[in-house]
Amino acid sequence: MEDFTPISASIGGALIGLSAVLLMAFHGRIAGISGLFSGTVFAAKGDRSWRVFFVLGLVAAPLVYWLAAAEKPAFDLEAGWPLIIAGGLLVGFGTRLGSGCTSGHGVCGLSRLSPRSMVSVVLFMAAGMATVALLKPPIGA
Amino acid sequence: MARNLMALLAGLTFGLGLVISQMVNPAKVIAFLDLFGNWDPSLAFVMGAALIVTAIGYRFVWLRPRPVLAESFQVPGNRKVDAKLATGAVLFGIGWGLVGLCPGPAIAALTIGGVPALGFLAAMAAGMLAFEVFDRRAAKPA
Image (cartoon, rainbow over all chains, first blue to last red; front, side, top):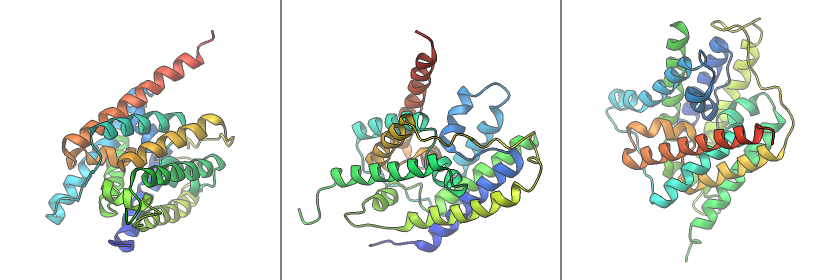
């Protein structure tokens, strides 16, 4: 258990929750990023522009942090290109087929006790943990 | 205009949450998923804090008859667990474990993750496009 950061994790999580509450209060929408992002192209006309602006805010956030904190946010990606492409395809297809991801099911869905979201979260967490366990050589090997 | 500006603010808030919690960093996410290895439970705190704020906030928001800038609240009413939901969640989980990026961080990482982050986002968009094609075919009567 190195690098355990419960305080920054909780502050960040609270901001994610605040964003979800803002989007519900002002737009009446769930802050589910996979559906929100996909809808920038595939949603009905007239239901796209707010999505584009949300995505722009998301993209700008690391730069805003970088400027304010004078420190580039850490980004360490170990996976090579075959895994990056396979992972991206699976995440894109899977989140749409399963109607949501970490935000839509994990935060918004669980907070309103949706049975679909509970099943989704258990399954994607288990699948993610199993994948990491299979990819990583066992400790001591 | 107000709708777009508020969406921009919500997106920025979400993104700052991802950066501050380090969920935008694939190595941090992999460490959380590495339950049987060198486990870092930090991201459980991200989810926990987000859940508490959202669960309480939603209750207050839903006391209003309608959203500030929209006609009605659009909350999914479907409560039936089906094979599509389960299959999608498992496929997503595998992809998440392979790289350590889910959709929110994948988008936010565009400005800090260089070419690999861009490649992941492009593959994710392609996966979403593939779903739209698959879904429209499945919906068409034979």
